[in-house]
Image (cartoon, rainbow, N blue to C red; front, side, top):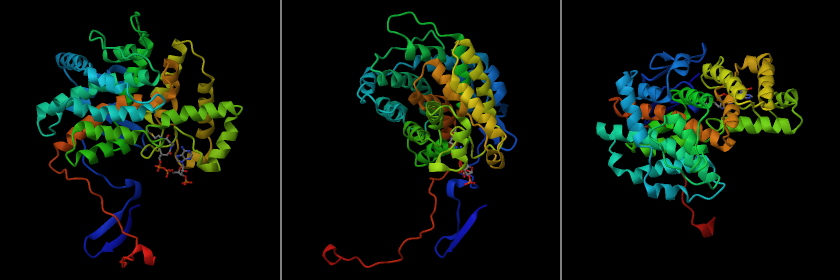
Length: 402
Ligand code: ACO
């Protein structure tokens, strides 16, 4: 419940709500979640229908503009995004200047922030045409940046986009193709990645989205706002969980693969160890995205002929959790990230790329939420209050008398 902590003489009633468990920061028409029932809808459309039948760019359009596009509107939007995937040549040079071994999320947030310096014509947050341009540039260039983040971390040359291919297909080519060699993406991989991007596209007022909104509430430009969102996403309790899940599975495997022993440590809270990829602030039921990802993990691994014993380990951990009182009583179920890493790994991504892929997927949601906030007459600069618990008043003492 809300802790009503203090009645201050100068401010009136102030509530303390650590983690914003009960405090709504805004009204929103974008995403609906019923955490108890395990329901997620974008603009009213159930997530399973969108994951099954839509495409990532169509979902991006839906989130940002509020309605599904007509066939003509969709192809014009896809075309516009595709044609902006090329980045300024100096930007390519800039991407090559990060040290090898830098975490891809650090490179990604820096690169997205740097877009504002390369495209100054797209910065005005109050001009609708400029905002639309920044929207398209971000969707387009984040895709290129994500593939460059992968390539620079391996010291590989950066490829140019091919406008004739689809958004996800060309992303895979720019990420994995050998220069000057013909590249054909596996349709199973294209479909699975498209689906994963859809599942990550928005999730209402999570940590990174709230960050985007609060930065934007100061009228910072869209690039600065979403770059802050990328940084918020990098933490292991948020987007970083998909990478942490794979590290956890690897460690269990390296220690003999004993799932029960690991779960014993989790339940005893030994060294704060958690079952990564489990639990959610809002879902107190099976995360509907996790159910779709779990199915997809089986399909992708099977289609690629990859037998990953870590998938069996993950299934074993889930089975233990779903019948264990520790997890049942706390309503801890797999979240979207429990199985995503296994799919990304099968596709050939290094674990450090898992969270950048989450950021690529979340971009439409951040943009939609930022735009909604900027157009909301109720918006004010985000400025939480505090309950001061420090010293009342002290007299300054010079250093030689302390
Ligand atoms: N493993 C073990 N115990 C857990 C876990 C977990 N993954 N998650 C929560 N708990 C326990 C806590 O220890 C706590 O127990 P207690 O009541 O005995 O103290 C109880 O469940 C409630 O947990 P909180 O941390 O208070 O729940 P909160 O809503 O603050 O945290 C969070 C949600 C951060 C997602 C948490 O469940 C967690 O750390 N999960 C692991 C990381 C993860 O997978 N993050 C991805 C989230 S989804 C996303 O960003 C896409």
